Amino acid sequence: MSTATNRPVNRKVTLLKYADGPVTPDMFRLEEEPAREPGEGEVLVETDSISIDAFIRTSLNDWEGFHMQVPLGGVIGALAVGRVIESNAKGWEPGDAVSGPLGAQSFATVPTGMLQKVDDSLPLSTYLGALGLTTGLTAFCGMRYVGQVKEGETVLVSGAAGAVGSIAGQVAKLDGAKVIGIAGGPDKVKFLTETLGIDAGIDYKNENVADRVKDLAPKGIDVFFDNVGGEILDVALDNIRERGRVAICGAISQYDDHLNVRGPSLYLRLAERYARMEGFTVMHFADKFPEAFAQLGQWVAEGKLKMPEHVVDGIESFPDALITMFNGGHMGKMLVKP
Image (cartoon, rainbow, N blue to C red):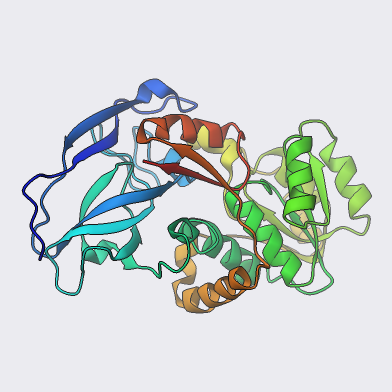
């Protein structure tokens, strides 16, 4: 166990009020306090990078949904990576690289049972992106085990320039599919085709999505990986092929009014075409994590899988980074460096 006489100052983002519609800066407060000394079985971690994920929005309501609600005055929940700087736990040493739910703060004192040690031969942020639970593993499990993509099939991905969408499209491409990504703006379409190697992109802000899907996939789509919901889900259902699959990963277009989510109006296409629509979270595939992690890691090592990062500096920038993600102002993995 190491000892420290002068604890570092922890800067943390706490919840001042619950959301009533879109996330706004006045919901949050930046606070400072001395980092807490680790109790038995705990370590003090200095945060390296914080993951900005869509699930955070669902924890900011004045009612508890699928993800645990953040209490007023509580630290905003978020996954992060960092290094142990003080330990009161056997087998955990200063310098160990770790990942886990450290929250939106510069230092975190947590039980080791909440953490996973990671190999620091890769940049630590890799374990939030390509090898991250809410990004790479989510995309891989959704595409491989829910979408069950096959070589030669046509795959459509919404939110394709975001973190999960970026990986999902590449997984489908590496599995031999033709991949069409939907994103907002010409720069994002260029990002899909030139940076990620996706076959084609659709700019939903400036193009008619329904018309473009029919142009690019005249025989229909076999798999739709949905991160957005709303009208785009109906477009996909209208173009689903016989025995097609729809993987519902998220519905970011609906999160600001979670109690009044708009469902698809064309769901009967599933019956007409003997297709299926299946929702999932990554935790439904915990038994598949070793296989998924190994494949993703191999692709990263071989340079076949790309995960560009949008990095914002300063823990005080966390609220703005979260808002930027929901406004579609990023490409790839959104991170905050405290």
